[in-house]
Amino acid sequence: MVSGCGPSETSVDKRYQVFISSTQRDLAEERQKVADGLLRGKYIPHMMERWVASPSDAWSTIRRYIDQCDYFVLILKGRYGSLLDDRGISFTEREYDYACERGIPVLAFLYENIGNLMVEQVDEDTARRAKMRAFRARIERERVRDTWTNPSDLAYKVSAALDAISEERPGIGWIRGDAIPDGVLSATVPILDPARLLGIRRISEDGNADRMMNNHLRTASDIRIMSTSAVRFLEIYRRDLVDAVSHGARLRVLVPQPDSAFAADVDEMESEFTKRRPIAEEIEAIPDRLFDLLAEARGIVPATAGSASIGYFTTHLRSTMIICDDDWAWMTVTLPPLRAAETMSMECARVGGDDLVWACLRHFDRVWRVVDGRGDVRDV
Image (cartoon, rainbow, N blue to C red; front, side, top):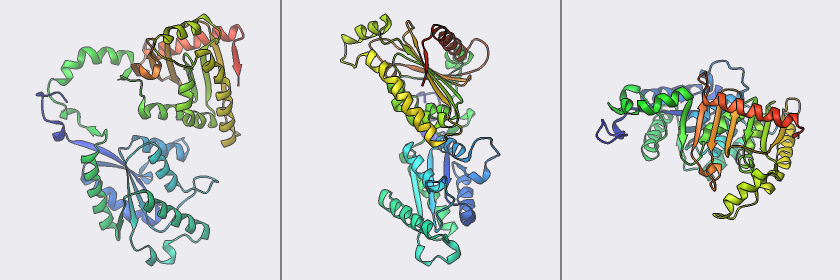
């Protein structure tokens, strides 16, 4: 907010997105009560039964919605629920795990009179009942949780808890366009208009892509990476890259020749300021990293696993480009001795014409054709 330009941040009418996680058929009334209570407040509930048909598989869709949410509400009663896969973990427990992995604030609500549930309110399968007991015990061990006795009690407690946490830990949320103070938009036009024309969505001052990178990597079918070494990127986003390749994505990585003058120059520029692993060693480690990544992806879904390739260039503008399909890119122009993770970066989307994503695509594809033409591309 800009001081003196309008209402304070606390007066802005912000809405928060909330993912409601529970079994569905046995908690239909409870879920509806909770959703109704949230809609009357400052929240937008996300519930699977309200989603539209999608070509994506169920788990990919669930992850995408969780990623969009500010808060995660877990509701447990007597059933463990449908299993996600042959590992025997339910959708509900995996949703909880994923929210924890993503650092999304979790609010847990456990049915109080668990010992008084009727036979039809618990799983018939002995193994699932054991899994439910273990899951509940895990929540009791890991979380400050609340209990509930009926749908109305639950709805009240969920709304009250969200009101408290949204004050203590405000999420990103949404605000109405007319809630933005007068003068702010007009003052930013000289900056925003050129950025929109180039497809720049946002700028990260420290190279942190937050959840945007995870989301785009996991759902992409063609991933292009061009970097000075790419080692750190492959480490940080390994899980997302494995997921993408396991569902058929093509992964291509462009890095310098380890023994090139370019790599030697990078080492020389960095040596005065910091003691880092030589670029050549990082580059030489990449094929093994890609091999392990591809092997893990093929172990998850052998029939649909994609491919991974690496190409070697000899000279390059010191930059990092991560391109997902033909419509999204993360670009960093690195200024030595800084690395990409320490440098301002830009998130870009295709808007048509000569935008930045188009420029990144053209550059990557041209370099790839050149190095492939001289035999410097290797399939993993």
